[in-house]
Image (cartoon, rainbow, N blue to C red; front, side, top):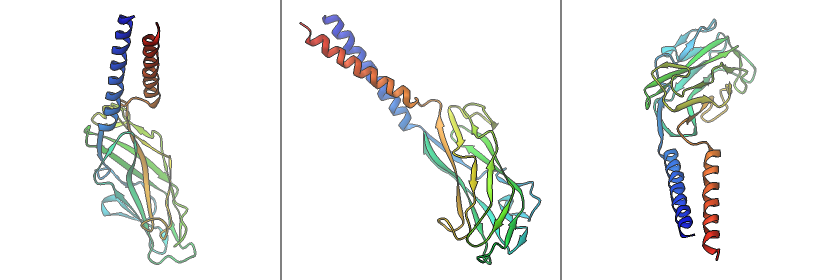
Length: 225
């Protein structure tokens, strides 16, 4: 009985160590990234001109309006977590309550630079354009497949993402009206970063359940005459 008790005790300690190490790996892994990279820009538009290094699109008809992408210049995030990939800022100083401004169709390339793993990937969004007034906007960006980059060389432009995975939370980004949002006219492009090296929640549950079973079994052996 003493041999069995010692074996179970050692197994419990080893299992606890594995669980603690897994939790520590999840908490300590930080990924740094930026979307302020060459290639992040409006492209292939038939509407108004593109300025500001490819980051500002002018309206095609009606009152003057601009749609500008503000990159996330540098961020560090634990995994897994939701992240900000940048913001679209819609501005129309002379727009009234009526729908007075039109944006023609456009494409937007969003390059994500994973500075931790020294790798880059790209999300591509397509929009049919839309009509804008001071309090309304029909512009939406439809992000095309693939909506995931990493791990490794999956959908990579350069380098290797290693265990890191970037993905879009949703494939549609609806651009808010010039007087909506905080700050006004601001629409965040949402994404998520995770890692193939972090245990899945189900795995953690199984480990915890195993530890509880071993603990209960050990108590049974000790109490048995």
